[in-house]
Image (tube, rainbow, N blue to C red; front, side, top):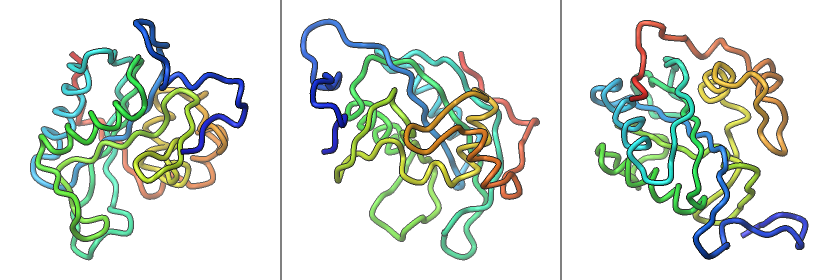
Length: 189
């Protein structure tokens, strides 16, 4: 695992004891199988019900064509969820995978196959990781309008550590592949 480049910086994910720092995390959620709105709302609700997680924002919903998906795949609905959390990055990832599984996500099939629910960790504070289980920041988030556009709606000043400002990345990628769906609103309560 790649940690902070400064060996004198404490990795907050390995701290023990009762106090854990609160970090801002950004998660991207998406669905292109079944009741897409129900699946996204379920992800928001499940994150909100997670101990040591506090929802701070949910973006507008965007509809997007699938990227690098099998022919005939349906369009995705996507959103971004911002949270504050004291959970470690690996624990938050485990929770994201459990939420996907609860909504029928099946892994191990065809690459980028349609899915009932996708919950991706994009950033967890300034945490960096690069191992078989966890990569932070998410390695493709800076190239995906379906992550950048909703994130920009929530936080126009946001930055992906090591990649740059979300606004500048979105300008490079463009908004052609995403359509904001103002007729769909996810509830945060």
